[in-house]
Length: 142
Image 1 (cartoon, rainbow, N blue to C red):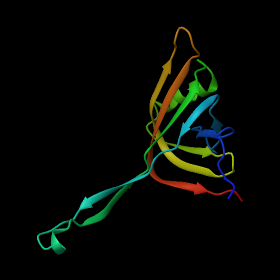
Image 2: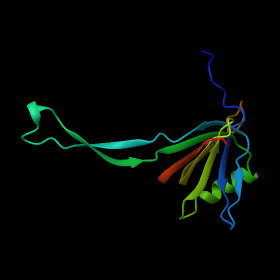
Image 3: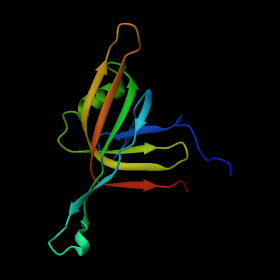
């Protein structure tokens, strides 16, 4: 069977601007996207009469995780301005990760970290984190 593996080149990380109607800004010069890992709590429901002394578990709450990106840091650029703005917003922003295949992973999140780095002998970069709130949405290519 031939592989269906692909590289991430061409993926986009899009954040909504606060104006209405919703307009998405493609963050510039993104070099790595870490989609949010979804998890689910597991709750121990073991009781004195659990069969044969085996622990029993029930499903708990789901967590949309935290997305991360790394990008080339361009001070004063549109991406820098939007990320600094997101750090001050009290409401979460709609975000979409657009995959090269045409699929999209949409979620609402708070920007929880924006950390530029300015090394003396390499390009300037920034790491950003986004905490997902609520359920993510997946769209397959049409």
